[in-house]
Length: 545
Image (cartoon, rainbow, N blue to C red; front, top):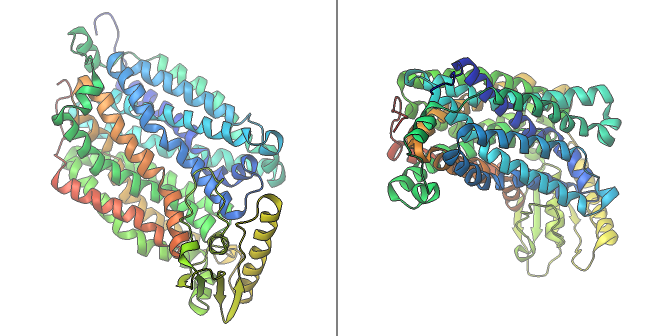
């Protein structure tokens, strides 16, 4: 670049990875606070509806990531990589800080969850433009033989951001105490984003434009219509679809199951105490950081395709046995109770809904829905038994039959009271049958859980470590930002973002706490076929084309 001193590779990697880590922090800080945020922004919901609100709010941020990919992809391909991800980091930091300032439902009513979901959408739009810019910027500076290694630091930034979110939350919680943290201390991790925003912007202002884009601009080779070139020309669209169904469906299914659904399952489904879960997840995420770098380096030696394929296969095959082993390690009393006293829901199937609700406001009021909500909230499996039409749903456990209640004619306080009555009756029957309210901390085998999660993590990092290099190498320079970002954020935003809510709805419908795992298993299996039959090896491709 004439007259402009190019930044060192160290600064390129450090600035891109650090800024991306800060954005991941802003987005992921929601995860350890999900339970509290559901109570703050959707007060009055029962336990199961609170789960759906938390999962739906999580998904809302992801749902808008493809939109961000389109907006900032075009900016990045027309105006430059640097400017695009300066805007994204500013938007993310502002939205995160505002969440920490929002009024609660008790104070502002319905406007509270509306504003909260809106900020999550803005976060999703910002993150939709971030990843592609950072990955492309590093890859376009790196030497071909080290491209997998250099871009793997962008992948590591997700681990750094999630670790920071978990640590800040844990430290704040311990410093303030549970009462103060629940009342107002939960806002502190969101406010911390203001400092991170300033650091991120300052670091990225030190950068210049990438050499590949600079050359493209100098020669007049920029795309005038990046959307048309990327998605309406079969050669490029075929590459977009290949990236989506191989790498990105696998990413959304396998990686998000390992790092997000697993955490939700351990804490909310099988009732492991939150502090123990946070401690385990922090250890897992920290341990994952060097693995991204290792697998990125390995892909420079043996190829991207083989590393990602084996990672996806190992994690996918391990999900069902692994989650069963996690339950045995975390809550052995639950496993014993399920074997000793199986549960049956006797109900008219026509009255049983698929309880999928992204904003936690749907009213599942039939006797079947109320009974299943209680059981799913208690983290227990059950068998569905068909009853004649119009029959009031019943829960049968250890020879005891507990009737549910029909709330379809009720709203507001009467419905809440009815749900509370059914909840008390069913949980009383579970307790009498020996079902634990939550896992006994003294009997939680933290080391075993950690090792099982690390097996998932090895597969997930083998998939994710080389992924940035592989994605960048698939697409031509003139449309790289747009064409790369959309499949990435459809895979992570829609496949990954909707995984927890969809998997939990599947659990409620089937009555099997492991049934939701079919979501990532089917996704991982689909990706394996695409890896083997569609994805080319891209290691060492010329990025100036």
